[in-house]
Amino acid sequence: MASVNVMAGNRAPRVAEAQSPVTAPPGWALRWMRPAAIATLVANILIVVTGGVVRLTGSGLGCPTWPRCTDQSFVPHRALGVHSAIEFSNRMITFVVAAVAIATVVVAWRYGRSAVLRLAVLLALGVPAQAVIGGVTVLTDLNPWIVSLHLLVSLAMVGLAVTLIRRLEEGDGPPRLLVPRGIAWVARSVFVVGWLVLYVGTVVTGSGPHAGDVQAPRNGLDPRALSQLHTDVVFLLVGLTVAAVLVMHTADVAPRARRAATVLLAVELGQGVIGFVQYFTGLPVVLVALHLLGAALVSAALTWLLVSTRERA
Image (cartoon, rainbow, N blue to C red; front, side):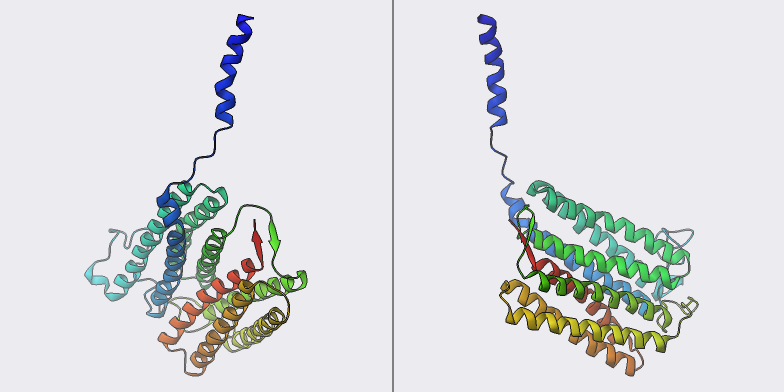
């Protein structure tokens, strides 16, 4: 009997430990998680714009090798001129993006939600992946298809950052639609066509004059035909988005989804105006840079529409 009591006494602490409540995340993690996610979004949009500035100023090979700037140095020297300074500055901004990503991972870890942590880690892993793709871009003398991939990955990271922000407003349960199933499919169609627009846009860029360096190759495709294809796909996207806005204003849907569709349409219209003006004015650098910013905003708005059609308990 004494041995039974001893065994029971040994079990009791384990039962109590198993029933102890989960430790709540520290207050600073709760306070900083959303700002960290927003900072991640802003940093990834920033790198899209600064990368575009490198290309638009002809500074893509300002540092002619990678990971060093030259064969002898990691930093540029005066003899390389302003182009090396622009290219090197963009490489340094990558460290800013990395710092924001690492800080976001740390906060997400202490925040205590595995879904949020996974998104933060994936965004952080995207930074070295982009650094390698950027290095391959330089080592291949700005191959337009690699440049296209480089931009598309950046745009995908913008969308992923938006998803992270949305997950902070949700639980971790299974997703539940906030709109009728038919409208959800319209939103998904908008998302797919939107990404087709972004992809074709990068191919148009690869055929145009802003190669990043006077010696950089082009993809050899007809810029005029590609621009027409891009325009056609844009009209399809705008038409689908108008349909999404109309059905969401006539059906019983969550206000969040309705706002997301309206914002996306506004972004698309602004981006379309910039695109047409830049095309008919000879692709001035300032407008092309604004168009790149618009592409990042389109990616963000597409993702926001998609994640606004559902919620998790």
